[in-house]
Figure 1: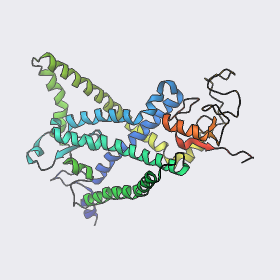
Figure 2 (figure 1 turned 45 degrees about the horizontal axis):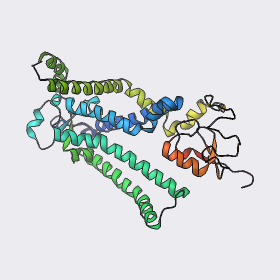
Figure 3 (figure 1 turned 135 degrees about the horizontal axis):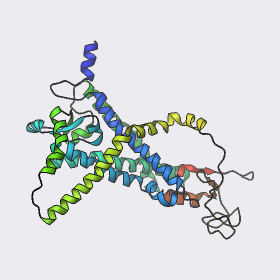
Figure 4 (figure 1 turned 60 degrees about the vertical axis):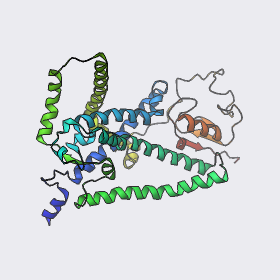
Length: 358
């Protein structure tokens, strides 16, 4: 029985297929890197909103651009993504027998390279944006900030109702594919690999030796080239240098990033709160509290945004300032920041205030 279990979870030597533990580990690596980097950016933005606030507002786009450079570098140099190469894996083109003997240092063909980039970089970006859109629509539907027309209302409520089932079917598809991979019924643990036309295999000794010797060979061979070719080569070297810097930094800090992701996960929030409990912080010291301050109205009952008596008082948990609910909701949804302090803020940080009168 133990031998049968070992056969299920261990790749055979003949086809060099990695085990389920290896492929799941490399999948979880990039999944852990994103929230850890996001937390680092959030800390920077909160410490100095004027200088680092743009990193928080454009985090998805900046991360996608850096991820694109990183994955393109590894796919063209090692025939694998960053996380796959980190675990000693490579991508092998399906249905092309002569490429089975091609070294990983040769890189993927352009067609399969761009397919891989699309599913490694573009697809996760669109998925994150879709999840944020669904969250925003749910908040608008719950608070009825902008009551839509009947036709549009029926459409997006149907979309919100169908999304959980579509997402469940999508995740179920991945789970079934992983079970088939464990049982040896499939060559891919992920449907995205099949759509990209590749499968995963282990790096061989020849692959590792070729990747170590390639920089030396490229330095020795310096044929005469035209100016345009030199410019293209310089651009490629520049992009490759940025990607190499990112990959080296991630390789060194990957375990630290995974530790950050674990530390700030939902399971540890109660422990963190108990260990880092602090007294109520004072108001931001960099603001001007004089009566002539353009940010704060003279009367405490006036909303700093619309400059009218507040209606439906709502406080921002990130800064402690009070506004009209409609004013601050629209501002936070558009700018993701507190209108007074500039601290990174999200809609879920709005807190309704109840007075004795209401």
